[in-house]
Amino acid sequence: MPEGYHDVEISNLALIDACWGASVADQVVDHIQMRLHHAGLRVTQGAGRGRFRLVCNMRRPGVVDHQSLAELPYRLSAEPISIEIAANQQAAAVHAVVSWEGDNLPRYRAPRDIQIDHQERWFAIYKSDMQIVAYLFRCMREGRLTPHWQAVCDYRQPEQVLYHEGLMRFSDASEALAPDVVFPALERTGLASTFDWLMVAHVISELEFDPKATLGVNISATSAHLHGWWGSVLDDLTRRPAIAGRLVVEITETEPLTHIDDTAAFARRLRACGAALALDDFGSGYTSIRNLMQLMPAFVKTDGSFVNKVSSEHLPCYALPHLIGLIKALGGTVIVEGVETPGMADLAYVSGGVWQQGYYHGRPGLVRRGTSCALPRAHFHEKEEPIRKWMN
Ligand code: G
Ligand code: MN
Image 1 (spheres, helix red, strand yellow):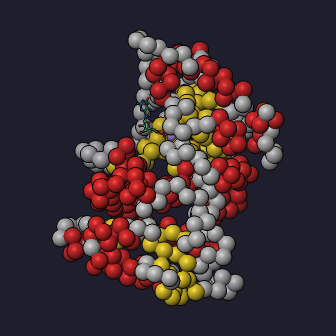
Image 2 (image 1 turned 90 degrees about the vertical axis):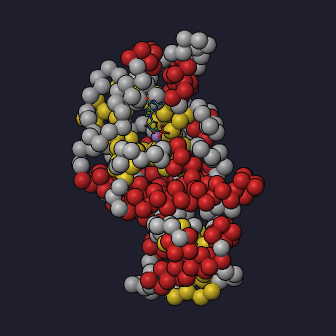
């Protein structure tokens, strides 16, 4: 939570009003107000509709602690607000995107940006996105999402596993919603960080449950900072090094990491508590070498397109060994993603990629196969200052 901010706002209230009308917007305001009361907070009306001033004495123990305040916007955002009657549709719900006012959070996409990004199409996109995310959060609450695990294997001994990456899937196999529809909807509505918070909690509880597992969790760039829910999670991990040492956090640059100093501060705290950072889909999207040097991730996962292009019969592209060489020269451990065939596995290996992930080694599944070794501790784990290898 940004120091000194006691004001929260429903940042998608105008959008809810435009899409579903004023009475639904009023219902959303009432719901959030009620939830704030239930959280034990005294609330006064902030400057404007959908804005609340939290009147609480944070020094008085037992009233409300700093950590639960930091998580408050995410808890409120994850809470579905039924609009069944207003929408005249069974199970229809919306989510209020609750955030601290004052914009201290590193800002990536916010709900309001959808209007700028999609102009006259925004209305239809927003309604459909909200329907998707409301359904997703409902499935999560009702246990209708199942974690699937995909191993990162050693090419030479595929039963040797670096870690298993966790991927949430709908339990119902006939579910038509695919991850490449769900995740962009989460990003566009501003609810990706709330989903990440639930996912990280889930993977940590899986680590508690299975002391032999080493597990990876994906978070979006929007969640990679210390101003939101990570503070209390990292405090908890610091107290439990046996859990932290088995956790890998994967960040994808679906958005350019414009708040790189915030992301780097997060990366340092993560390393300090013994967990590992992985930069996902490297080489696609907005990846920059400079970011790699600032974040010093233990693992860098090359985007699946690279191994795919090396093995392409028409127009092969031989960037993979150079990309792997670059990452290694900078001090990272490489994971080659998207290995689908024995030929691709061989090519990735001769390109320098010992650690591999992809359908050839195993699809994401319910059962975790193979044995995890302790995560290799790169030498920069020991030091706080950027090592020469990364910064030169
Ligand atoms: O961005 P990230 O690498 O975390 O995405 C993982 C996604 O990639 C999952 O949806 C997973 O099912 C998919 N995936 C895993 N292995 C392969 C593969 O070998 N080929 C392709 N095309 N997709 C894969
Ligand atoms: Mn990943």
